[in-house]
Structure formats: structure tokens, C-alpha cells
Length: 631
Image (cartoon, rainbow, N blue to C red; front, side):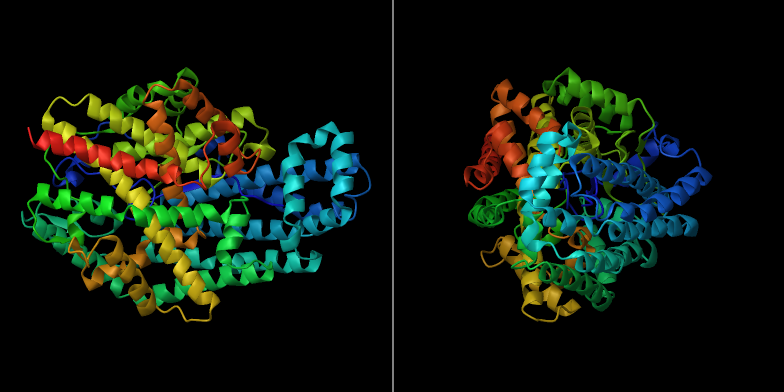
């Protein structure tokens, strides 16, 4: 019954390119740009609750409302009006519960060192576990009523219309729905099964003592997540190697503990899949959004077929950097110097508005509203959640955006990405009732990555020098590398470790490092002499937070595929494709995502062409770059 509303968490900094891909910084030492920023934003959570005391009062009230929900048990089949009363009550409680959870989560992420904020967030998590238990009876009871009676109720009671998709989807899930006792058991286990993600967050953001290093110019750099994100882009190769060796060496010390943590996550997923009688964890993950398994297999097949294009890019990168033997720490530095200036918040806003103008005034009006309000937490600070995300759970209010803006081009790209999510939420909320406004990640990332592609083409078109043009063309390749190839590599790793667990193989830290290392070397062409991967860098799996989100990462690769497919036609002047795309965003969760894309926009993600668009774009960009270099 309960489907958590959109809580998009991307990680341009936190997860080494998990979400937006890693584009290239304009100059060495980009950390210095933070001090140059003149505009910073702090969000105002008063739109959710005016004070901690107000949240406490709401929390006390919602606990009572949750505890009262079982009063509807046994009534769903009585008549259409009674079914509507039950679903309307549960929906209202769900809406308020999301608001309560969102405030606690955002408050915690301002500073994760604050014990009170950690406690509040833990209480919110426990609230949702209790919520799940309180309505765990609903699906088994609904299935006992039967599809014929449900359809009769829908026809008789127009007020049930907002719940029609949800009701029919529950019927679809009948083979994987347990009886009331079984559903209650799984709901009760949800809090315990969710702990690995919490443990990871405490390791990554609050527990690991990050070392400080001295760079070749004498400056010191604390190699935490933010420092790693900056340091890996340094133009001095010895500095980059030092940053990589230090950062991954620190993670290596926690290999066994992080292995046990990820193993707990995977074992929990295997338990859930088996309890619900799915063939496997992947099938369970795909079923929730009715995604054909061919989407996953087609993605992996097409990405592996496209590895020669990826290797072409790596070779071009080595040539432009003047490096004959590429190493993993050579992926992130700029391949060409360009005087692009500082991309502080004000400049990022102005350029993003100009780049996204082709989306039309409705889109831009929503973006303008968001940026003129206190919806964003923009810059790094001690204890703050690293990375970037959009939180859109408060249907009656508005989305919030967390950034860690470093005032470089990468930060502006992340800015456009996250606000793409925010406008998607606003479009969906305006067009849909609460019950169908929550959209899937499968479409969500297409909305944000399409914004990045438009930004890229705007910057390329408005470059004043050959060097600038090469810089932004290179940034476009980095988005494809980070979102298409890297995320699919993550997806292969995730599938491999879940399949291993399903076969009873133990997932230890060293085993995970070995598995990840093999994929890392294959994708980056070590056997073909393209790039060498040092052993310690295979520890990277421990750093990726999305492995705790259950087959989430592959959707970044499908997203850039879909976004590129749309952009390829839209940039050629097809405004009908643009309108179809916006209609798909407005559809929210009114249908399954694959069906929305197919019917609203004509995109079939089970077909090869959906993925080949990225390879075509990469080859086109490299053709343009090589032509410029030959001038």
C-alpha cells in the first residue's frame, strides 16, 4: 500500500559520479572558489513546521492517527463508499507522515553531528515502520475482494478515481502478496532491514577520521568526500595520485566492516524477494514499476557493445593530457585549460535559465519561483550531508534542494540537475492528485539529465574560444561516462553480488573488492592497454551509497539514454518531442513508467536504439573535438 513519495538523492560529490556523472572543473585548486562565492542559500523549513515543537506536536498526532488506521480492517469489501473512506483516510495520513519524515531528514542533513537531529530522524524512520504494520492488512484484504468487485466499486464511486491505478496495481501484485500475518511480519522487519544504509551514512559522514595531506604547492587538503571530489581534479598528477591513495587507503581500513554492512543490505533484499516469491532480487526490483526485464538486459548488452567508444574517449583523454599510460586517477582532471571563470550561485542561476529556455515558459516560471524562495541549502559546511539531492515529499508545499556548491562548472551542472528534479516535482504535483503525483526514479533522472544536456549544448554554442569549446565538449563526454558507462558498471556489480548471495556465497569485504576490481578493469580496458587500475582503487565499492538503495543505479544509465534520445530529436528542432516529454513528466505516477514513456512520448526502453543514442552522441562529440584539435 505505502509507496514513499519522491526523495531523489543524487551524489555528484558523494558517490564519485553516481548521479550526474562527473564533469570537469575549470582549474586546479577549485576548493578556493568556495571563498569567492558572494551568494549562499539556507533553506527555510518553516513551510513544513515552524519549529521543532510544532514537529513534535505533529509527530504525536500522526502516531495516534497511524494507530487508528486498523479500524478500517474488514470493511473494504462492504461497499464503494466504505472503501473510499478507508483509502481517503490512509492517504491523508500518508501525506502528513511524508511531511514529518521530510522535516526530520532535512534537519538531520544540515548537520549530521547533532544528536537531537539524529534521534528525530530515527523516530521518523520508526514511525514509517509502524505505519507499514498498521496497514499491512490492506493488500491481502483487497485481493480477497477480487478484481471484479473492485472494478464495480470504481465504476460506482467516482471518488475512488485517484486510487484506481493503485487499486489495479495491487491486484497485479497478487502473486507476491502474503496473507495479513505475513505482510505484518515483513512490515515489522522493515526498520531492521533498513539499518545498513544508516550504518553506511554514519561511516561515510561522521565516523571515518579523514586524513589531511600536503599538496605539491604546500597547501593542505583534508581528504574527506568533499576534499576527494576537489583533489581528484587537480592538474598535478602526483597530487592526484596522493589524493587517490590516501582516500582509498582510508576506506581500505574499513573493508571488512563495510563488507559486513553491504552484505547485511544484500541479505535483507534476498530475504524480501524470497518471502514474496520472486524469482530473484532483480525481478523483485523490476516488478514494483512493472519494468520489463529486457530493459536491464538490453542496457547491459548495449553498454558492453559500446565499450570501444568508451575506450576511444579514454584514449583521447590520455592524448590531450599527454599521458601515455593512463591510470584511474587520470579520469577526473580537466583535459584542457579554459578561462571559464567562477560559477557561483548567481552565475549558475543565470546560465541555467538561459540554457533551459527551450523548455518553455511554464517550466521556467516554476524554476523562477523555486529560486526566488528559500528552498535550497547551497554550500558545504561541517557535518552537512555531502552530495546533492532534491526532496519532494511534501505534496502540499514544495520541493527542497540540497547542494554542496563548489562554484565550479561541475557544481553548476549539478545545480541544473537537481533543479530539473524540482521542476519535475512541481509539474507532477500541479497536474496530479497526491495519490498519483509520486513518479518513479526511472523517469525522474531523465528530467534532470535532459537539463544537463541542454546546459552542455548551450555552453558549447556560446563558447568564445576554441579552448572553451573543447572544455565543454569534454564535459559532455564526462556526463556520458559517469551516467552511462559508470552506472551500468555499478549495475553489473550490484547484480553480481545479489546473484552470489542468492546462491549462498558469502559476501566479504575482500570478495566484494575482487568482484568490483574485475569489472573496473574490464570497463576501463586494462586488457586492451587503455587504462591501468591499481589494486587499492578497487575499494571504491565501499564508497557508493546507492548500493544501499536496491537496484537504483542502473536507472541513471537508462535515464541518460532516454534523455539523450529525447535531446537528439529536440535539439534538431522537434518541438512535438519536447511537449511529449513534458507531458510524460506531468503524468507523475498515474501509470507505470515504461508505459508512460511509450504512450506519451513513443520511447521504448526495451529496444537497442534507446541506448545507442548515447553512443552516437559520444562519437559525434569526439568527432567535433578531433576536428578542433586538428585546426
